[in-house]
Image (cartoon, rainbow, N blue to C red; front, side, top):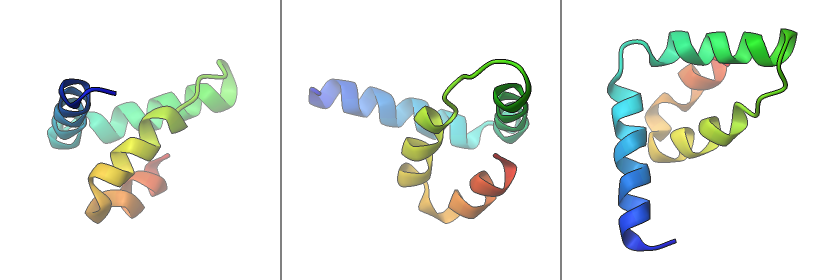
Length: 63
């Protein structure tokens, strides 16, 4: 990955972390993964937890 792509990904994860709807969307995506559609929520969870380790348990609890 180029440095520009990494900073773009980091910026997206920072915006996600600041969003007041992020945890509700994570909860909905996790429920949809369990009940209907096998979408990989972990593809978002792992980078989000690595970028914001102070919220990792809150994020994991919601998922």
